[in-house]
Image 1 (cartoon, rainbow, N blue to C red):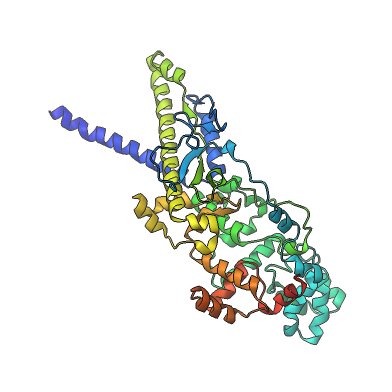
Image 2 (tube, one colour):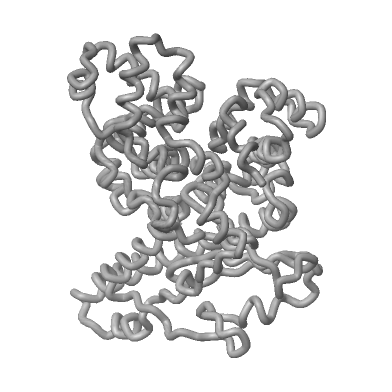
Length: 481
């Protein structure tokens, strides 16, 4: 009895420690994006000799890769399921194929709406119209000279000193005019480099009281090459922050900053190339229609690296036959590999539960767009899933989802209360017979669409959508068919 009393706390402590290790590892894996998790799984496979990839199984009907056990979840969904109950399952990331662009998308890529304006107005003219009321007569030649030396990305190709020399103005005057240019649209125009363009955009965001992470400026100053998901560890080390904070910082930069301010409207529209610092993202979750039927259930694929990862049976069997000296080492290897597999399963299970809830609650948003988003908070979802709110936050962070129309969104968009109002604002502006002021738009949003937002908020949302103010939208209307 005394021996049991002495041993029980030790056994309990060991179990608690093991649970804590699994929980910590699960939370870490849950916070990773699909690409980061894939890299982590590949590293684990290289480091753990006990791990292997199980032989591939494919569904004889649809050819889809199958998990280690069980039938095809798409061809053999559970019996007795409600007609609109989402079909949710884990899928191998290798099965993802980007959807082919629709004819409308191809047309949009070749001739976006902004080009109605860009075709008839040069970048220099566009910026000059904005700053002209604030220029003194002696400043106009300086502005004209600076604006004619903007490249198609909106970056300045000469120094203020060179401009002062050619315009015979003082360096102070040139810098004063340049500051006016840099306050114009597109944000960051007139910068000397992509980094400076992003720093200007950070300053403008702060001026409209948009939340800006404390280390954003410092991260931008480190250079675009470091702003890559693959270099998040180095970025965190250089900034003295945690890797999770560095990932959040990269998400903010990708969503809010543009190193080439004018390229979208005045650059080469037919390059078809993404910015080198903004890598193409594979979605973590894909929502699609079952057999293309909009009245049928949603099919939800949660891409999960390591689905066929397992402990090698031969390695496990051989462990019992080696000498005592090596057995402990091999057993520890198997234990570590098993803990990793358990953490992966828990991570995948949490994402599946979240994806199923989103498919149930946000079907209209998934199928019909942002105006149909239902207000939802992470705290409410956590209560529904019976997990901590921080678990939901980790499950959402750094994740993307592909909608049935092929559009890629952030998983955090499901919790963005501004989306319906921003979609309504875009619809209002698209249908206006003449450009409406922000005050008029705020009134219409409130009276006709139920979105009670202030004029300042309208201006913020308009800027987020890349829509110019009313007095600069007039040329768009003139050139629309």
